[in-house]
Image (cartoon, rainbow, N blue to C red; front, side, top):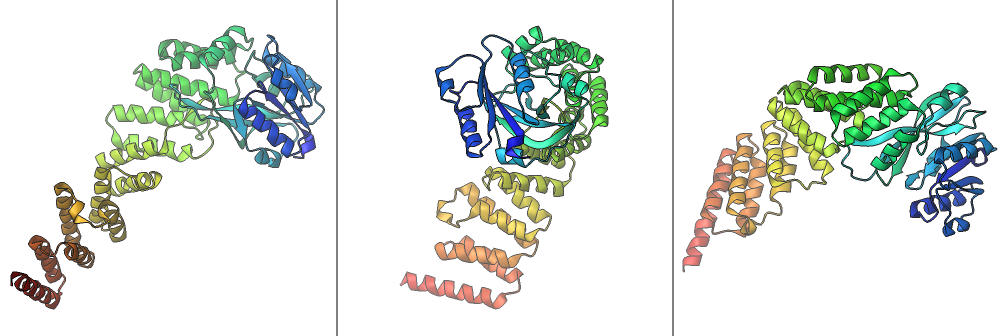
Length: 444
């Protein structure tokens, strides 16, 4: 897409640091058509070199946006809010097709009490003939797509949002003022779900699903929200059925898998719980096709999967998820988890991994700084190495330790015993002679 083919509409006041950064980038990229839509007059707005500056001044923001949309001259339009950022190079590199509009993934970077951290919204679209967005403050594109006969295609473009997706105040206002009732029902349901009012949320989710004007991403959101509300009310059979219906529409989403995981885990079926959480993790790496989808930290998922695999007696999978945790944390794991990593590596006879995790747990080898527990743990791990006939590594460790503590008889005995087990009898005998000779010299 050429720079000259696109009009960018920035929504928010120019005193927003993020919005000003977007303006600077647009100017740097020589995008000639960008428009600022503000909620109220601000002195800083006069410093913006936008093509035009519009002020809502108490009027519904969406109605002003529609007016702007019908006045632009470029074939393509994209809008962005004041607290959002996007990779402008990716946007300009996107290949557009006539009669298509493109949904963009919006991800919030702010921690929120709500489970919902991602949405899908139509942000990149052709200049419409007559149709417009519905809504009051939040633009909704269902009517626009239907009347213009556009196909909505999911892009791989991602917007990072610095605040929560939709504040409670915005949702309340939108529900009260918008004429698009199915969208309003969904917003109201999301609001009530976020406040733990699941019975009321269930009612509004069902109202939203009765109509046929919801976009596909929003229909998925309503079904997933309903499944979650049913789960929270311990109506497991209904929740499972709703989650399954959502997955029949598309598997590229997240929340249904989490709902099914929670139900299985609650019922004590760890194998089924592991399967659903694994599927969640698979699709967590992809863009979801559902609006208001959830996001659980990847490290938390691997921790839960590690526990489930352990419950199932699958130590190979337990080791795999522990290793993922180790990598995700840059090697900084709790000592007990590192100990478990080492034991599993030895138990599954993965020598190189065992050496890696032994070194992570005990190196640098400075026994004078070890606690009694850590010293005992090290000796126990080395005995496990010997049980696997990995004597060479154990001998090297004992040798390094003994050079630092040459008066430690217990350490010498362990080294000699390991040399004997590995068949190095002559070296063991020589070591004993040298030790006794050194003791004799010290006694003079």
